[in-house]
Length: 189
Image 1: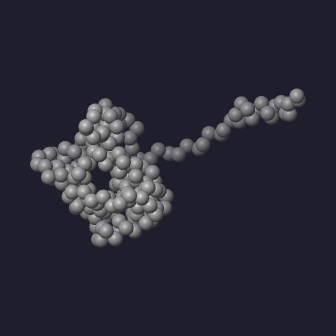
Image 2: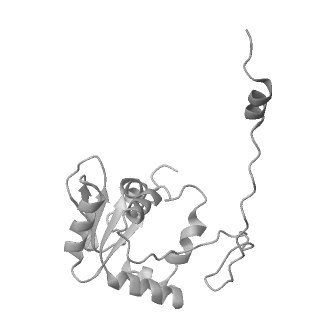
Image 3: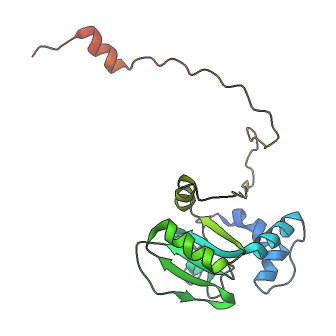
């Protein structure tokens, strides 16, 4: 719809974000009143309070930029990994977006300096988080798992669930092509 910021996650993604948008702690951070006060709200409040800086990828920034508007929810310095240099962008509420072109280590070093004794959050997207995990730079991983309405929890595994015994891998059968080559040998022309 013209004039309306697109929803991060695409059309129909609203239910995935409702859980946090309806929390009292998130609403307080945005200068609003009301909202649900529950354990999720407490956890998010603790998370917000402990965060001193944020690192995100360019795609996450690009997806959220219009939606977040002039007053993004971060309230801290945000370091955006990109190959496209841009000047630092200062927003309301204490959020600044600094565009880092010297890789994950450079972004993390800047974020740590800005955060002081508080946490640095690596918020995504998936590629950004994977780069930090592969480099061994993540000390703690916190996932917020949200099931879409109607989603089944069948097959979901909790941390306390017993692990199923590992099965031995099944022997692989040769592909039809490799069997044919072995049985027919060299083809004559």
